[in-house]
Length: 309
Image (cartoon, rainbow, N blue to C red; front, side, top):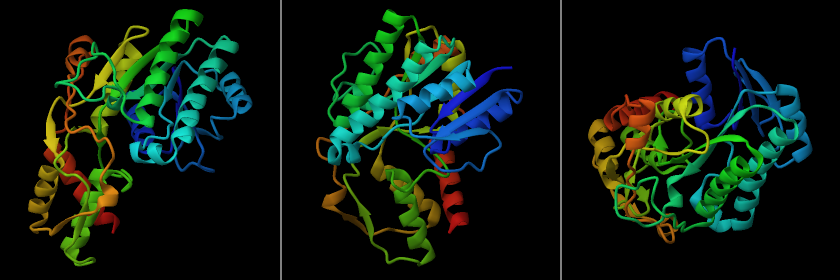
């Protein structure tokens, strides 16, 4: 029986990963940790701040996991520009506290360190794991630092750490703080007459690589179970799509023609115009294949948003 510790357990990806384990490893012992005061899932749960090194050390000593799926993070690029110090300290301290607790307590745990496509910066496409990294935001610098520290802890202390550079992932239940659920919420409200036909957007001509969160957690499970120590994997669809095309796809499904208005406050500074990943390594080494087409994901998100209104 494998024992998992999942940080950010109450978050978007954390919940889906726990659901995935329930289906694929029903006998697994699942422990979750999050800053949220309580948990509505049937798992062992601890509410704590991962920046508290003493509490993290006690957690690792008590739970003694086989696998640590580290999902907790300050994950907003926009927020990182407003709080660069907070973003760096939060993301780095949380990871280092976990890694040090594993090392200091001699726990034989494999750690999944989740990174970001933002680490690449501006590049020819598709982005491959072998590319030199050129981060362009405080968030991406923090993620790259986490990856470098992961490799350092493998090389110097012998920890077992596998890493991702995860591209955009979407799906039902995602917070409307993120761009695609924000679009879908506005379009659903326009279609139902709850708001006027005025859709607020930023730069919708950027191209992004979107993967269904249900395919993402399958990739994470394969990486933590099958990957070699110290390896890094792109988690992506390999397909680029304009944000404008997703708006059109959703609007057509809802049979509306939105009046699109650009809000300068929603336009990111130093936004990378085109981001597409290469998932060849994930597919060939670990046998991963995405199951959800983008059109299916958008349909599921629309249905979820309509039911939750």
